[in-house]
Image 1 (cartoon, rainbow, N blue to C red):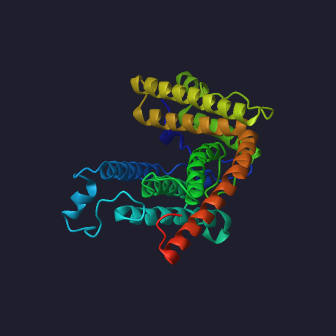
Image 2 (cartoon, one colour; image 1 turned 60 degrees about the vertical axis):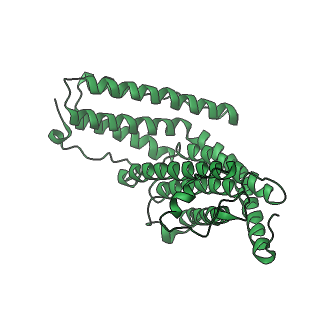
Image 3 (tube, rainbow, N blue to C red; image 1 turned 135 degrees about the vertical axis):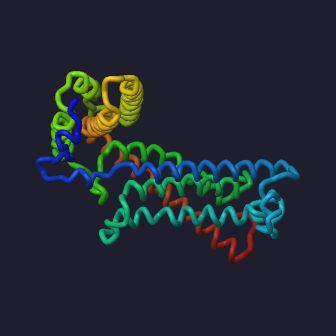
Length: 319
């Protein structure tokens, strides 16, 4: 069987000269690290919140204090007392730091400081962790002016997950520039040719590769219908790709190196096909999302800063 090594395959080159290496892909090591770290932090702080508010004599803070850390903090059930005041500071810091993503996105002098996709992953990590920390900081007492900031924060964080999903439908270069439709089509054509150059025209390989297809998107769909159509397409093709992976792994006639390269090409084809057929739909929905997301984020920050300023000026316990 022909392999990539035998054919001397390289990366696909588009007619417009787009270097495929400049296309932003998910940084899996960073992505996995952030998810694991986020889950551990959020789980630990939620458990601690439950134990302290329940009045349990056993809690994580007590365990940490056995090693000489955070000794000045005692069990508390108020946002202004115990560790929850510190948690509020850390949560606010998460929100402030996560806005560095906007600086990376808007200023050209930072174009070489990591891919925009990686910055977005960190932005989301800080947003989710900050939301959990801030929620536990309130000790679940939602009232007064600060409740406006809290509910804006919850909506912003929740809608951020949708925004991240829509962002994934639009291919980007590492610099953050969106690929145009012509570039996507050219890349798909070049990828098909690369598959043949690298793996040959073996009917078995071609059959695996050609099983990935994408229904045309519709610019006429309203936002809700479009999102559901995109979601169900993703679900169907995720299941199909999983089935192909199982079949490839059980295929004893194909070398492992060929299986891995073919599967990588299949996943890349799937990503580009969905971008090609839903590009304008995803761009339209992302525009609507920005109109909804940004004002709430601004309101959240305004009330948060008012809350912080009033606290430090007047030592208020609640706003």
